[in-house]
Amino acid sequence: MFWLALLAGFIGGFLGPLIGVGGGVIIVPMLNLSGVAFQAAAAASLFSIVVTAITSIYNYRGVIDFGLLAKYAAFSMAAAVLSAFISVKYSGSWVKLIYGVYLIAIGIVLLIDKRPGRTMPWLGYLLVFIGGFVSSLFGVGGGTIFVPALILLAGLDAKLAAAMSMGIIFPTALASTATYAWLGALDLSLAVLIAIGSFGGSYLSSKYIMPRLKSSSVKKLFTSYVFAVGAYYLWSNLSLALS
Image (cartoon, rainbow, N blue to C red; front, side, top):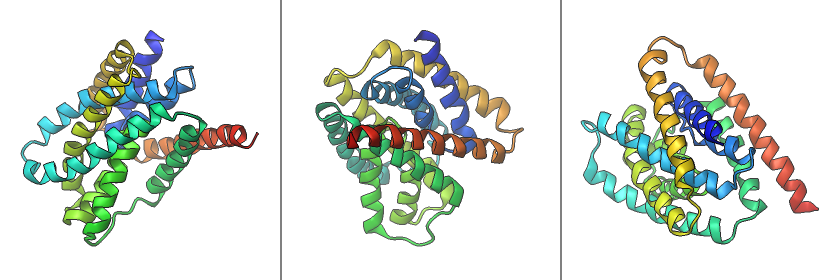
């Protein structure tokens, strides 16, 4: 499990900067399909997101509006705590079934590759809440939801919304991790190993690979991955639900 945790963290951290999606969609399935309980995998992934998000916030500190951020983060943190509690207390195949739907939805978003073009505040707040819930439930950053939410909510351009989303991801992941730990679902040694691997992968990708590599081919590979894993989770857990 030692090398698996490091490898899962490294791959997740490596791919994140290249395609703009958090490493949780890599880390959680790798751990879960290798025998780690889904909630433990999600908790460990969220711990690594807390660690790596700190670096991103420091890098983006000049453009993040922290006053505005606090209002949005409150919605996502409340959703994250509720989600972690539901996941642990009412765990079952339904979580993995919904996770399969989520992964396929991520694949569709990556294929379409479009951002909303006008401000819709009511939908933005709803998406921030959903993003916090999904982030905690599945152990992901939630940037694929937070970025369009901020565009709808505040009319931010995509680049600024991406920076601001990191400011939401950090407190959301922190609240989720604390809740999972309180409920006894966090394996700290596993989480630390993933965080180490994720930091190494993210640093290598950001510093040496991203400036030289076009991400289109990596994005296609990643999209194929989320469709395949999503289909597996859907098929296997739908079969259990119907049996």
